[in-house]
Length: 209
Image 1 (tube, rainbow, N blue to C red):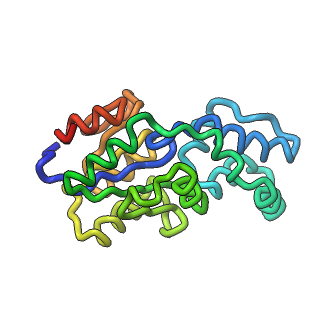
Image 2: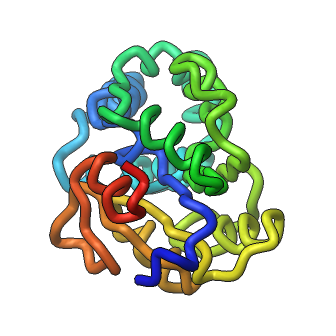
């Protein structure tokens, strides 16, 4: 990885910027309970953690052909009350500030859809990113590379000018397909250009701490 070429650092949300395990589990468990289904098992949890809401619902309710009543229930449940269970990663704001002070573009590429804006607002992060690309903006969410290609296009960057930080196989596949540098976050089994466990470690790699 040539750190001198990197001009933008792009973050996945769930599992990188935030520990969202409890929030996502509570959300989907409530959805499942509404239809008298058991809570998420570990395999289901790992899968829905990477997916868009639409993909997750199709995955969790394969026996239902018309999912309109599930989506109706989702609209009543909402996600906003579960944001309180999200925990911001230690050192995130400090890293984002350091990136700005050193001239980096800061971005998000996430399979969240309509909740990202509220998350940024609730945690005081609205002004910390130059570009935010969610699954609602693109036709094909991760593992498709469309989000990363869109960031390249909007920011006038080449693939090797982007470092993408993710924690899942979906993130890795998107990074490989887009040709960007990839940092695996808190997932040592994930094949990556570099594996890290903290925001401080990312700052160290970029030599901005």
